[in-house]
Structure formats: C-alpha cells, structure tokens
Amino acid sequence: MKITLLGTGTSQGVPVLGCQCEVCRSSDSRDKRLRTSALVEIGDTRILIDCGPDFRQQMLRLPFKKLDAVLLTHIHYDHVAGLDDLRPFCWINAVNVFAQQDVVDSLHQTMPYCFPKAGTLYPGAPELYLHTIVAHRSFNVGRVSITPIQVMHGKLPILGFRIDCMAYITDMKSMSEAEYSLLEGVEFLIINGLRWDGSHHSHQLIGEAIAFSRHFSDIKEVYITHVTHEVGLHHTAQQLLPEHVHLGYDGEEIVI
Ligand SMILES: [Zn+2]
Ligand SMILES: [Zn+2]
Ligand SMILES: [Zn+2]
Image (cartoon, rainbow, N blue to C red; front, side, top):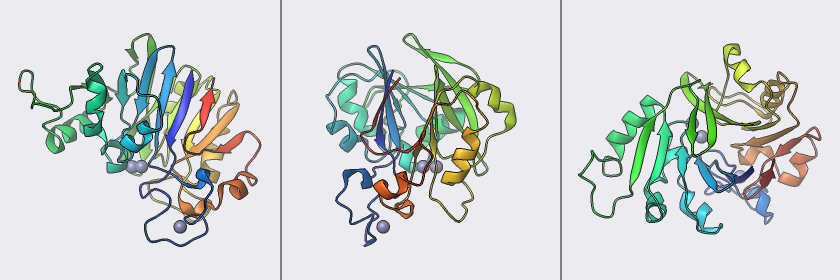
C-alpha cells in the first residue's frame, strides 16, 4: 500500500492569503500546504480520500491514471469542493463516491448536475456514482476492504477510514471509546493536528493527536495533517515531535 499525502493544510491552506508570517513566506515546499486529501494505492486500485478545492492542482502533480473510488469524510468545502474536477477521470472509468447519508443528501442539493437521477446525465457532467455508507459497516472497492469509523468533528459526526493496518482520520475533535476496537492493530495513523496551542471547538491540536495515538499499542508511525501556518516552519516543528511522529507534508509518500 502506498499513501500519498496530496494536501496537509487546514481549510484556508498555507500560505494563507495576505499573511506575511515566516511560514507563509517560506520557500520550503514542505511549508506549502494544499487542502487535506490523500491518495491510497493498493495494487492497481486507486482510492482518493476527500476531494477538496485543490484537487485539480494536486492531481496535476501525479501521473494521470484511473481513480476507482473517492471516500468522503464530511461535507465541508475543504473536503468536497473538487468533485466536479473528477470529470477527466470519468473519461477513463466511472468513479464511485462513498459518503454517509448527510453528505449524500447535501451533494444532491449542492451539486445536482454531478449526481443526476439515472438516465438524466447532463452532457459533459462527470459520471459519478454516489454510494451511502454507514460507520462500522465495511465495504469493498475492488479487493480492498474499507471500514468507516465514526469520529466527532465538534458536534458533527463524520467518518475516518481504516484500510488494513492504516487509519486515516481528519477533522476530528474526539472519538467515542466505543470506536477504539475498530483501530485495534493499526500500525500507521494519519491524523489531524491543527497547531500546538490554544484550543479549537472542532479540531484537535497536535498534542491531542499524539495523546490519542497512545491508546493503540501497535501504532508504529503517526503522520499529522490538516495543519495551520501557526505550527511553524516544517523543519523546526518536526524537531519538536517524537521520532515516530511526522509532521506530514504535501507530496509525502508513505509506503506500507
Ligand atoms: Zn477540514
Ligand atoms: Zn502565515
Ligand atoms: Zn471540517
């Protein structure tokens, strides 16, 4: 399995428009963070997790190949705004989009031309098929089994995903301990950590992400994503983290 972190920035991205801080002015590519998304490749199965406003730019950096599925964590703009840009991938094959019911309902409202009723496809619209998934109920994309995990984004229940020994969780503030068994045996955890200090009503901080990871004894490596410019320069911030915790950066490849 190879996971490519396509974007590791929080909803505004980094640099933040108009900001003159040293991170936003940095020339280090690891300080330039597009909106959070990842590509998971297992054999010839390619699965995108979230499809935000930077999707097109993210895919221009990679070889153009088919996408089998898109997993959506939740309906926020920074995670779904790029769905229309799936059009070129639909020329290769139809793309299956998996999300929980509230996201499916919202997409039918906000992007009806992308997800029409059978037989009424708007000419040129992407051929996307929306599938409703439910937390805890595993489903398959090709031969790949995916288990959705319920996490709380403030008061909003959203999904994380477990694939084999990897779990991908973004925009989490908390998780019910009842979910912990779904993460048993996970060795690679990709998880959101907004910044070092303060607090946030719907996102955990980096320290909270590390503390959360300690609940799972098999975890070998932790990758922090959905990061703000306030975290500081990548090379400085990375030195403040335990050896097995990595401040993720755009383009980072995790091979398992
Ligand atoms: Zn987000
Ligand atoms: Zn800044
Ligand atoms: Zn969100």
